[in-house]
Image (cartoon, rainbow, N blue to C red; front, side, top):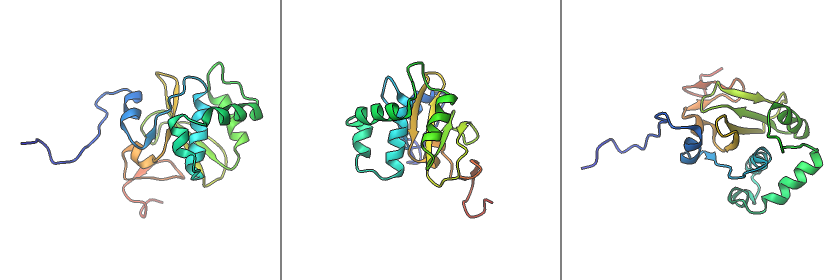
Length: 163
């Protein structure tokens, strides 16, 4: 006889963020060794714009050319890694999107938030240990909350009652 109530509740139980990114379906695990921030931004833009190549980008096909042309047009060098200065440069290039980088799987752990008023949000997850970026496809699923307010980035019990 199985034990439990039939729910597959995913708790962190002290697991590192890289393992949680692999387990959660709402987080797209980026497998690129180099330029992972550029890869994550391309995948997030494809997700927001409902690009037909979104699944192909996740699998790692056809994305190398797009990332190389993005880095050439912006002039951003990611050879030493990517931090807040590179995020500011990407935010200046992508004015129609608001880039939000989360440090962990909590709503309050925001590492970077672009100062752009846009309804299109690119939610990125940063792993401090491996210094790697992942894409958050579904923010409420990744944070394990019922609702996450897109204006103040706080979790709440219902979207209707949150002001």
